[in-house]
Amino acid sequence: GAVVSQHPSWVICKSGTSVKIECRSLDFQATTMFWYRQFPKQSLMLMATSNEGSKATYEQGVEKDKFLINHASLTLSTLTVTSAHPEDSSFYICSARDTRVPAGEQFFGPGTRLTVL
Amino acid sequence: DAKTTQPNSMESNEEEPVHLPCNHSTISGTDYIHWYRQLPSQGPEYVIHGLTSNVNNRMASLAIAEDRKSSTLILHRATLRDAAVYYCILRGYGGSQGNLIFGKGTKLSVKP
Image (cartoon, rainbow over all chains, first blue to last red; front, side):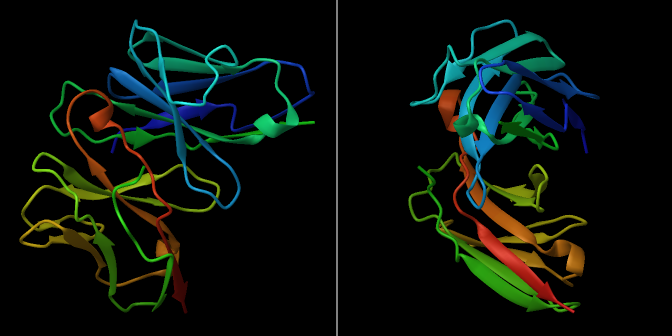
């Protein structure tokens, strides 16, 4: 199957700093990319959806000014957690799909573990 | 909100078949049934999906009820590596209907 990579796989930062997470589709063009967040022992929660070249659509309750998403190309999306605080510590997972393919598969990255001290 | 209902957990013995049920009584005619699984500290992995007919692939089989209100993921011979949380998700078409919304899933434990 197709591969989605994330970088970094884990990051530790101080409270108040910003962290950028990259998501890449390695062997297909991702017209749509998704960002999820997962707290311990909970399920994945969709944060936002982005189409290449367009502004992201955020789910209710997700602060767009805090979680900046850029989807500048068909293979790269970035999530920047601005002014991170300990409550932002979580497992962030990106996902990608080529929506031009009917009922196409959606592929997930390996996740990024963010710890804010 | 997730539109599927799954048992919280199930247990299986190694090398035995496993049948993971999923109820989706409000499924619409254009919703596909997707199954993903997630191993600890990893991103979800695609398992299988279907619309109306039963489906088979190298990982599993998907049996879909005739009225499409329920489905069953079948692992033919469970291995220890199959221990994971299995998510049954409905995915529609167009806009937010095409988003994968995860419920709580079924945590499968496999005993040696």
